[in-house]
Image (cartoon, rainbow, N blue to C red):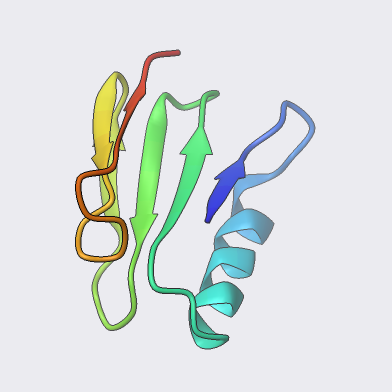
Length: 72
């Protein structure tokens, strides 16, 4: 799942939404935050990983061999 923060979005509600998705069974989620040039990676039972842009996102075991390059 990819969530892209818009200019008008506050980050905290988006982070809460990502946690709700995890609670509903999400296995891999990316919160792309161009304003802060970061990507937050969400997976069940793991600490949120934060990457600075540019970065390469991997599909891990959910989407094997999937790669998404983020350059904002």
